[in-house]
Each structure stands twice: as structure tokens, then as C-alpha cells.
View 1 (cartoon, helix red, strand yellow):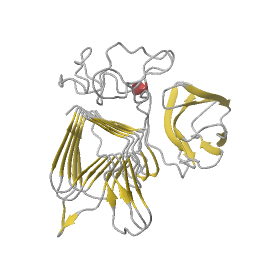
View 2 (cartoon, rainbow, N blue to C red):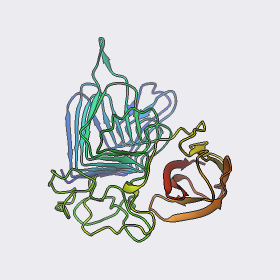
View 3 (tube, helix red, strand yellow):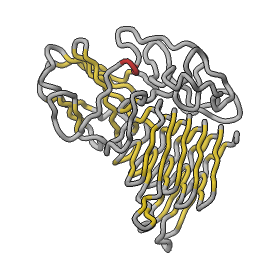
Length: 341
């Protein structure tokens, strides 16, 4: 409780061939309770063939993890940059963001069998898993096991459709959080962005029946709590002409193929300088493409006519996660993409 675990490196030399896990915390068969704490900027490093997992937290087989009202940010591993779980995990009112991995940048749940019974599981409520970076399963990757959503979560990119979203969950959009900072209290947190140019979709989108304090001990502001570990203590203005991100269309997308209904992008992640944007056949007239960075700032605005495909030049963009807004008339679609160099 009220602990910061930061800037650790767990390393293995070339003689190790087994997995290396848990840059911030490792739980093997016990009970790990993490409450109102921050686990950030930890790394797990190994020389092949060893694999690394759980840059922030690794919960091994038989272990029980309870992550409550906490932040997991900026951690690195080959699988599960933020959290890797092959045991039993419960995550509530927490923020998992800006972690980096080869697979499942935010949360990874792998195959764990006992006879014919899958024993890995996740129950998640009121939590952000978004704006992480990975070559595959950018935010959320589940190889096997049970996943139960109690609602009011924001999951960024769920490429394998492993997250069982409820009516109160949001998927496929950025959480639009500010960088990890000292926002008061004893631990660092991510405050939702909220000004004249952007509005985070997590603000006032949490469980209206949950009046518990946030990670810093701040009470719920207004009638409804925010999603994640931080509670905004001021009103958030609606972005003029666009509304909040929560009000925008946020369809899931297939980055490899064109559809008649949604905007698609390819490649994603982007390793070169060009990302191709394919527009739906239903679009008419001019189309505006806006690129926003992870702080919600507009980086580029391009207007094009409704051609089948439009190449976006990204040579000036640094490695990171971005939001593409595509506007055609009254239709707004949001797609998140990652630039890797």
C-alpha cells in the first residue's frame, strides 16, 4: 500500500534458458496485494533463448494477484510489458499504460493448464489498459484462461478480441492520459488530459455506484468516478465541434484488409515512413485526417477527397502511440496506431 517500485532491472546472462519474469514484482504461488501504489520504469532483460515476462508485475502459476487503485507504467518485457499473469488476477480501478513489449504491451495472460483445466484467470473492473506499445496484441493479449469484465473498463487495442466487453466498457480508443507525474500524494500517477483541444474518455465514465477514493486519496469529483486510478478534480470541457472521445464512434478495426463499413490502416505497427489509410465506400466529399499524440495534442491535419486509399507520411513521427481521427461530414472514426523504429 502506498508504495513506489521504480527503475529496477532484472537481467539474465546467456547461460539461462528458462523464463525471466517480474521487473517490479514477482509472485510465485503466493498472494500479492498491490494497493494505491505505482510500479513504473522496470525492465526484464534476458539473452535468448530465455524469454522475459511481466516488466511491471509477473504473477506465476498458482499465484493470486490483487491490483487495486494502482498505476503500472513504462515497464518493459518481451511478453506482458505491464502485467503477465498465469495465475489468478483481480484488477480494479487501476491504470496500465505506456508499457512496452514484443507481445501484449499492457496485459498478457498465457496458457496455464492443470490436467485439462485452464487455471489462469482475470477479473477486471474500472481499469484502463491502453496506450501501450507492442508488435502484437498492443494492449491486451490472452492466450488462454478465463476473463471476466465487471464493466467500466477502457481497453485500447484488443487485436484477438479476447476481452469480453460489456455495455459499459470502451474499446479501440486512446485513454488520452498525461505523462506519469507527481500529481500530489506519495506516488506518481497519470492524470486524464482535459482542455480545449482534447477530452479523455475516462472522465466520468466509471461506475456511478463506486464512491471509493482514487490512488492519491482523492474523493470522487461530481456524480460519477473516472475510469482508472486517478480521479480528475475539475470539470472537463467538451471539445468544440468534436465532443468528447467517449461520444465519438470507436469501432474495432482490421489493419490488414479493407471493409465497406470502417476506416482501416496498414501497416500497424508502422516500422517505415508510410501508413496507408483505406476509406469506406460510403464516404462522400472531403475527408479530414487528424493525428493526435498520447497527450492529446494534434500533430498533423490532412484533408483529402474520398479516394480508396490515402498514404500518410510519418517520417517526422517518433516511436510511440498515436490516435488517427477520420472525419467525413458527421461521421468520426478513431483508430490507434503505433510507430516503431
